[in-house]
Length: 406
Image 1 (cartoon, rainbow, N blue to C red):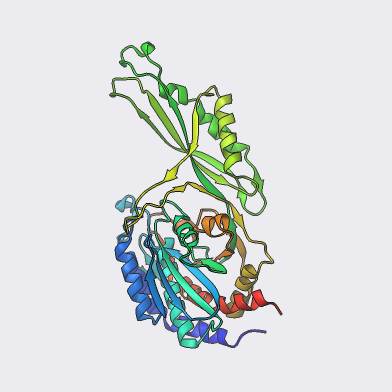
Image 2: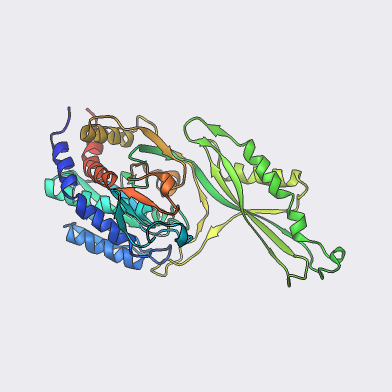
């Protein structure tokens, strides 16, 4: 039976349409590269206070957390506030930091990835408070940091340090208003060789690290073709995305060379299997001495905290029968009169730490299309903002009902 409050939620989200879009425009206008999110965090904190949130705080890493309600159950939503760089401004039809509205869309860097989710979450918090929803819940809206540089670090900190202990987290990364229940994991791998430098006019006197590592490049491309496939999450992938070398000068043979592998992990793949496959592939290509390792992220947050994290981000997948998934289906059906499409992300999200590392149930529902992320002319439809705001307001009660059962 449909909850009669669903109609009120949809109506209120529609009434707040212009305010939600205006907030997103303002957030887009605030530059917020990873590690430099102070201004946007402070703006979000102010917006939460203006919306009547019961508590607003900033943790030691720099995440901003706002609470609506005082119930015993803890439901959280996440939107990362950092963005990638602007890219070539000449490829944009609208200024990338302009936060302009055209054709019913908000344009700008971060519009879809991922400030739209934050704008919708703040509106949802307002609706929850105004309509007296989620009486059994504490609903926490989290604006997280540093996701673009190290996805999951923010939530690894939150969960590892006990900042918050949610029963479920909804990621508001873009899903095209589908309900996502998983994603491939990923890891960042470096393969390195060492040599001996000499003058470039007599390369036979040295040992060129670039030449030694070169056979590894086609070997990694060939490895990509034979990686595991999962019917729901898709295929595991690996790609060489950077090569660098060191030498005394450009007139000298390189004594060190490295390549970087972006590795996406499907179901059944993990850190150990991925490293083993790379080691075997480069050894078979004639580079048995190559060093293969996972990178570690050790960069200060805007608060100055360094919280080291290995750049291995596990695959995660929620069962279709899980209360979090059933709650998402119920909320969507009640609000919009139809079940959502249940899907998965192609890219990576903070779910790698929430569900993949810490085992906290996680689902996703976000405005805008994943393909817009990191692209020129990044944009999000305002209609999606409205629908997402309504979904976030309805989800906590739907989760309580699904978790308790009939």
